[in-house]
Length: 159
Image 1 (tube, rainbow, N blue to C red):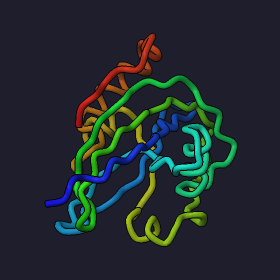
Image 2 (cartoon, rainbow, N blue to C red):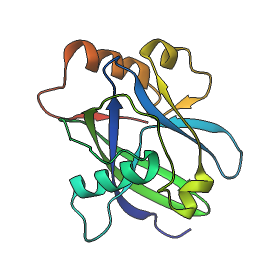
Image 3 (tube, helix red, strand yellow):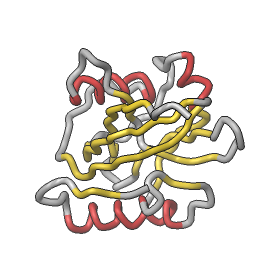
């Protein structure tokens, strides 16, 4: 099996004034199992993190006035997608945003296939989620983040 592709990515925790978090739903290509995750994605070779995050959020949910808050988490994630193995390094930012209706009109062809839904979640709803969340302990992490504020330096998180 070939070495995994190393990929750098950035994610936005888009939280509105009611402390709801915007998540996208994807489905595993092989199994069809659903999972929910924050907007964001790969950093292109000619981009810095901020430009990449603004581009991804604009493409995926149609929000173009993104103001980055603090970097709160970092994660290394190894996974396979459509026959390719990845070793992804992610940086996660908390971004306070006004509530808006997500619009996926700017999605790439691949994103249009891979992203099946988008919705705002409360912490209580996340805690009751029946499909996988990314990361798996997202409800608890978001609860702590909203109660305690951002950490002094980004925390390393798991799956």
